[in-house]
Each structure stands twice: as structure tokens, then as C-alpha cells.
Length: 341
Ligand SMILES: NC(=O)c1ccc[n+]([C@@H]2O[C@H](COP(=O)([O-])OP(=O)(O)OC[C@H]3O[C@@H](n4cnc5c(N)ncnc54)[C@H](O)[C@@H]3O)[C@@H](O)[C@H]2O)c1
Ligand SMILES: [Zn+2]
Image 1 (cartoon, rainbow, N blue to C red):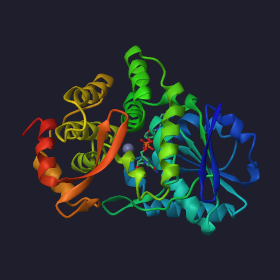
Image 2 (image 1 turned 120 degrees about the vertical axis):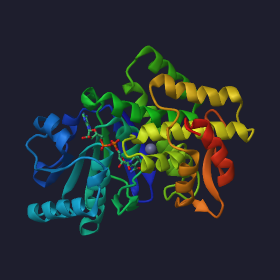
Image 3 (image 1 turned 135 degrees about the vertical axis):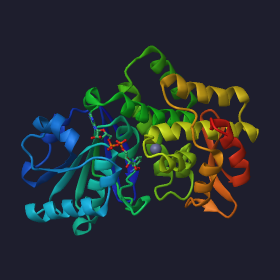
Image 4 (image 1 turned 180 degrees about the vertical axis):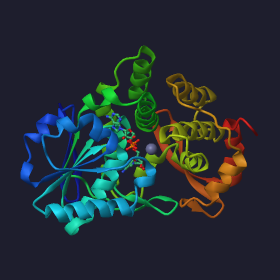
């Protein structure tokens, strides 16, 4: 087990990588603990929950709403959950985001432990303290930044994770390599090429995210580099709801690498390498949507400032920088990933 400490303004959040879930159950008070999970995870893992009370939510972005938070509040009320209790979220990023938000807002904050069960949640969603739900058409519009008491990462959960979900997590792990650690990227690339397990790489990704987050807990500066590939990625997710998050981000990272090359920051060979790494792993690097449609959505993006958008580019493989990019320039580069120009 590797313990990674995330220091924050209210204390320290321990991220325990490689600890079995069963070990957590032996450390907590079963009379004052409630598990929140979703229907799939409940079906697969209910027998591991040690008889603790469980609230089960549905699945998919559509349930990441205030209505679902209210279902959790109702369960908290019925069970008498107060500030001496703990909420344990066992699930993917959706369960972690909703349960952490409900716990953060219930009685002005009850303790919350996150047990991510998807690769994406292990390396990304469960790390950094952001929680929340969608509101109307907008993703994560309601939420807070509050670190959980602890995050327990047990890779044994990944045995049942569908391949498409694994690839989504892998896209975020590649992102960590692209923006912060060229050596890690190389190791990850080799692991993918040889079909080796990704389990031993989770801790490094967590360390990278922790290091960025602790430098900028409230997202005013460096934390924005974690959005590498996400500006275009979010627009693609809205254009095409059948696209998984990691898939959309993979296309977005390809655009960002190309733009980094056009801006003279990285070589053509480096931009091609980004594309090759993603596509060799099985992630998409192009889209059927038109550059004009993607750009139109971006103009309505919350990060937009007048005629430009704050965009994360690569200074080199392993280092990122935030640059204002005019929409006109972005649209030209977008065309390079659009099959129908
Ligand atoms: N808070 C943050 O900083 C942050 C960062 C990144 C993403 N997110 C959020 O995370 C969410 C996406 O998370 P996700 O990709 O984990 O999606 P998810 O929670 O929808 O999980 C994906 C699917 O896998 C299933 N599943 C979960 N664990 C499983 C397991 N061990 N075996 C088999 N199936 C399993 C789930 O039931 C679900 O159907 C988005 O809502 C996104 O906004 C939050
Ligand atoms: Zn992401």
C-alpha cells in the first residue's frame, strides 16, 4: 500500500493506493456509516459491504442531479445521519461526485470517504476535493471544493470494469504524462504496448494530480493545466452524448498537441507522438463533427474571454502552459481532427 498525503487548508487527506476495501471496513464504526453506491456496483459488490446500510443511486450523467442529492438527504434523515457519521462513496466518478456533495452540504458537512471503483475515478474524479452535480444542461454547475477524509484505491475493483471504461481512465493517465511527466508517459506507453497491468501506475497519476491540486486548491492558476484536452473534449461530449468522456478528451488532446506544434512550442514529431500514443491504445483521435460546430459551442464556453479561449497547450512533452487562443485560430486546427471538413 502506498499512502499519498494531500495537504489542504483544513488538514490532510490520505490517499491509500493499493489497500483492500475490506481493510477500511475494519477501521470504521459500522453503526455510524452509510455506503452510497450505484446499481451496477451494488450488483457486483454488495457482498463486500459488510452488512452496512447502503443507498443505491441509478447510473449515468442523467442522474447526477439535485433530485438524486435529495434522495440521499432523505436517506440521511431516515437513518439519523449527523456529524458523528461517515458517508462512504463506493463507485465511479458519478457516485463520488454526488455522495461527496451530499456529505459536504448535509449539516454543513459530514465526513466522507471515497472508494473509487473506475480507473477514471481512481486517477482523477476522487482526487482533489471537487464534488457536485449537473444543473439544467450544464455539467458540474453546483458543487463545492472540500477534501474527503480519505480516499481508498483498491485496484481489485478494476477486474470487472468494461474495457471502454478502462480506456477512459487511461486517457486521463496519459494526460498526466503529457502535462507533467515525460518519463511516466514512456512507462505507461510501454505498459500499454505489452498489455501489462495498469494497477502499478495509478499511484503515479494520483501523485501528479495531488501535486497540481495542492499548488492551487481553488483553481485560479496551475490547476487549469489538468484541463488539457478538456476544452474541445467537453464541446464534443455535448455534440455527441454517445461519446465517453475519455474518448472526447483524447480527441481534445490531439487538437491541443497540434495547436502546440502550430504555435511553435513542440515539434511535429511530438504532436504526431501524442496522436500515436492515444490511437495505439484504442482511443479516438478524430471526429465526424464539423470544426465550425465545435467552435460555435466553444464560443459559448464558460472559459471564453471575448474572441479567445483559455487553452492548455504543451510547452514540451511533460510540461503544459495556459494560452489564450483566438477562436479563428482554433477552428483552423480543429479541422485537422474533423473527418468531414
Ligand atoms: N470531481 C472531479 O474532480 C472529477 C474529475 C473527473 C471526472 N469527474 C466526474 O466523474 C464522472 C465520470 O466518472 P466515471 O467515468 O467513473 O463514470 P461512472 O461513475 O458513470 O462509471 C462508469 C460506469 O462504470 C460502472 N462501474 C463502476 N465501477 C465499476 C466496476 N468496478 N466494475 C464494473 N462496472 C463499474 C458504473 O456503474 C457506470 O456504469 C463524470 O460525471 C465527471 O464529471 C469528476
Ligand atoms: Zn477528464
